[in-house]
Length: 199
Image 1: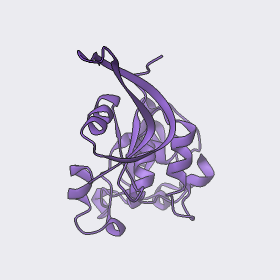
Image 2: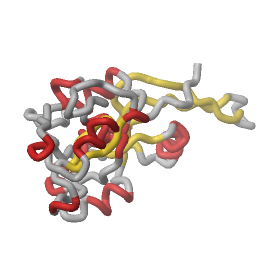
Image 3: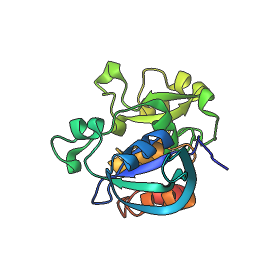
């Protein structure tokens, strides 16, 4: 059965994870001969039209991981200074995923709608809106901390915030990650990544 909601992991030719794509985009890449090789399991078979001469129906088998020629435009633009210096854009959903939807002050797990972004060092005290200065906090803890540092509010952080690498960021964006995609992504995480302990 065709599961059109299953995201496909797109990588570059070297195997570096780039982005999640819809199966339609994957089919386009395959038909344009832009797929260098595939990895992982077959996730779907897409059937096309019937050839007038052979009377055979065309079909494409789509794997869970596609290595393609070239990089995504967003990745190329953000990585113009090199992959080692790449800083992913800061959005709440990947932030909450980074922290496993746990408030890093009270330690309780919440649904994303009950979470907020807290600046460890507040803007009013010179803090930046950056991965290393933001943590997931429940609304109650965030309101209690207000414009103070954790020390000033008498609160303790239960984990240190960190900036994810590009491979970690791709993982944090995924909603339905297959086991083979997960293993592939984990192999690209730094050895010291805190995500190894959370997955």
